Image 1 (spheres, rainbow, N blue to C red):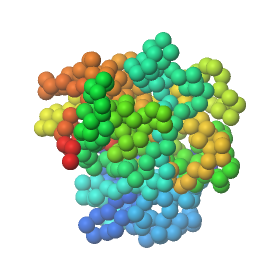
Image 2 (tube, protein in one colour):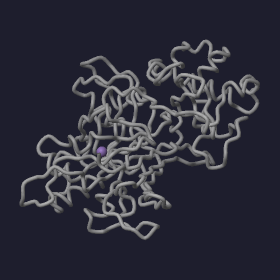
Image 3 (tube, rainbow, N blue to C red):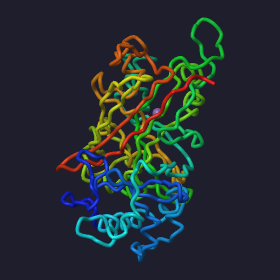
Length: 421
Ligand code: MN
């Protein structure tokens, strides 16, 4: 089935501002409600949200295999149960209805289209399980240099395995939900016993995450060739990290309380279909990977990313510009590896990319690296400095792809750090 919704020549009868992340070629899915309605599936276009429940009521989504309850839903999971081809057909149909020459929806504009400022945007997915990878060679190298041996920064398994760990789904939160600085065991004096205190080295991790369709039964594996059929779409992902808690607790089983206090996602799930025109080669992998991790074709995306910090009552400062294309391990390899032992992936699982650091000092994906363990504080526009994230700082991440005059974006993921409770 062709992805007709990706045609760069398409224009919509909905007015989309220049440089919007959400032209008719994007059509990301999310959940919203209004003062007069319950939660429902929406599609973002420009500064509007299209109510799919209302579109369904008009009879305009007939013969696609969906039911009303797939759209009058608190999460996208019921809709996602229709799988890759079902959602692709739906997105193509929505594109047809929003296309400039189509009048079917236009005549009902006031009942199906809501200004984004007039709706409440909700958590889009019921996340079953959450996994976070560690797939940027630059990030893994930087961390290895800082905490282990600069001469052997990468651990021996890193070039063979898309390293990951199982995170916690309950504390994955929507953009604009503010969080309190976590507390825990830290060891400010390495020679003394640990103390219990608010985290002093609070960090972000610039990541994306992919969300899966229903996978295969327990015991079966998803190959790199099949992987994209099992991926619904992507969001921006901030894997908040308490570095001082992490340093003390992570041996030998990896991150625990340093990570599970909160992880923020952007609200609009950009489909893998919409990202198809922006595919690029992944970095060359050497040594050659084991056969189940081999893949053909372009599996990465030219997705520009940036991070900004906005101190309280002050303008923001962009502190990093990175790109998803730097990732050493791609999503197909991550999913193939995740399932190679027979682990079953479910509809609505979330898989973090790992911190996306680029090759230059201004493209690193965490404060740990940008300020190099606190030794190179970052200057903010208001004259203040940052080694890590301070109370009342807002951290904002943005991302978009762009070519042939089409910009497919993610909006932003943002949250403010409130003082410890
Ligand atoms: Mn992470």
